[in-house]
Length: 174
Image (cartoon, rainbow, N blue to C red):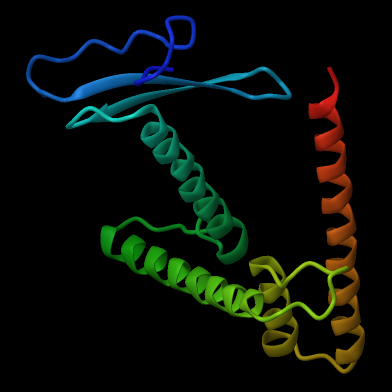
């Protein structure tokens, strides 16, 4: 990685600077701690940037990618058969608005103090399922569906705890 405070063994040479753009280019390399796989980021900034700033911005990229993946899975962002710009723009706007509503509901539910710590908070996925059950497909056995949602969230909390424990134990091994 390239940046202030990085020693010669810690950094890679920055990419060549194009004479026309008057910016600063850097090459950021991230290694996955479990697989050893390398990810490369070519960075450009109008002014010199610190290594910490470049790393923070590269991390934000994954948040954006996660948002698009959520939109594809939760609100069908990738389920369009559109041939014109206006239609695509309307469809994408509606899909992202639906995801925003789900995200606001999840954030609102997360803001409340948890009464049961053995259960994960409501996620966008679970809120979409509940809306689908309660609004779009009304059922006679609503109590059963709500108990099923609670069971699934408890199971996910146990799975997350086990996953974190396993990852921590792997990282602590020599």
